[in-house]
Length: 181
Image (tube, rainbow, N blue to C red; front, top):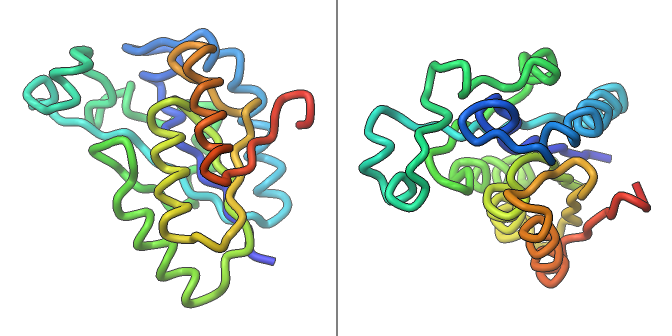
């Protein structure tokens, strides 16, 4: 059975850096435990990395979120230390927008090569990049079960986190709630 775990944007700037998030800080141990267990079970790991450049403030995202973050090559762009070792031999997609465009094509190609039985996503921010990538995966693998572990995600706010989880449920993405985890 082929399973994938996609770890979305677990980067310094989203946890303790430019866009510091208390919910993300609290969630990190859950994510580390999830990634460690997945690796030990032989689950394939994929990481995404939000990636911006010096022109960030001129981009559409920069105009709407005027906080430079995840600038390629900076400490804020790096995967958090607690997960770095797992990212070393994982496939990593650097993405310049919320959804990792290349991820969808990669998954479709991989599914043709060998059926993907299940995809799970965790990461930051539930209400921006996790939901974007979950819906992207759903679009490219419509007949593959897609799950999100809510205990291993953090949103911009607790309310927007819950709103995103509800939206994913409406799109037939299974959400594991913390009390079920």
